[in-house]
Length: 337
Image (cartoon, rainbow, N blue to C red):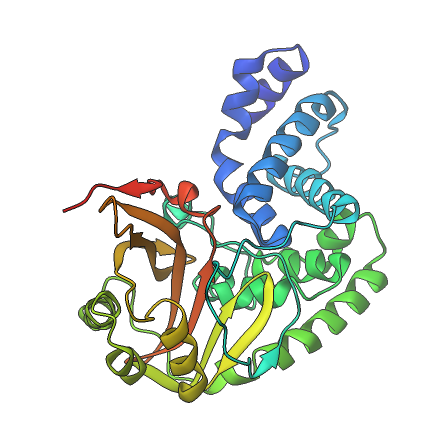
């Protein structure tokens, strides 16, 4: 049937093309996200991939599967995007009148956006190859995606193709149009960097299972404490090594004391009323954050907040600005209540 569809596509049948590539679109978009670190850029890269595939399919000779060939096209489009990307505008944060405390660390300024869980639906059947090193949940986590963005583009591509998707080294080399020795060398360097980045994650307790009663309890307690503006109650939910980040801002706050100072001057500062709308990102609990206008009474979005959990604690909070909520289907405003 695939051969028939390919023949029809080569004859110019657009419907046949949609049937041919349809089963792979969601996993290709996720692949683009892993490389680019941005849901918006991944969507753009997917469209570029589909256009390139439509134009290039007449030359497809069948030496690999359609899926492998599509990954070659998508990877090429993403690496090209990384080479040509322009410097992004600064994040519109902090808001006027907010006096940020001194950070504990200046991190690397990386472009990072969360990935809505609704885009992950139906991907369970796209099982990685037997040589994959990362489990599916780990390979979509926000910490993993952030760590990937610190790798040089080619190393990033090699590690994703080999250790996340499980392609054999020979196929990785073919996808990247390189030698096996070159691909193996890049993979060795990428693995070393990722081991260093994930040193802390390796010794932490695992997060509760998504949707479990344990996860729901943490989320509910955090929601109540945050909406009440209760700094002490929020801090009680944090792990000792909590990390508070706001990419692409390089400011990082590590440890409970630093996190308490940060929240007390920002999201939980006196006079600010917040409302959290639950959602999910990167397989993790997340919220659309809304702030009440004291005059009009309506609630305006102030961004998206993603929680990273370990055991019964929160070990990371990652805040994103007002450009992100629309990708989660979250409105710009909520009515007064």
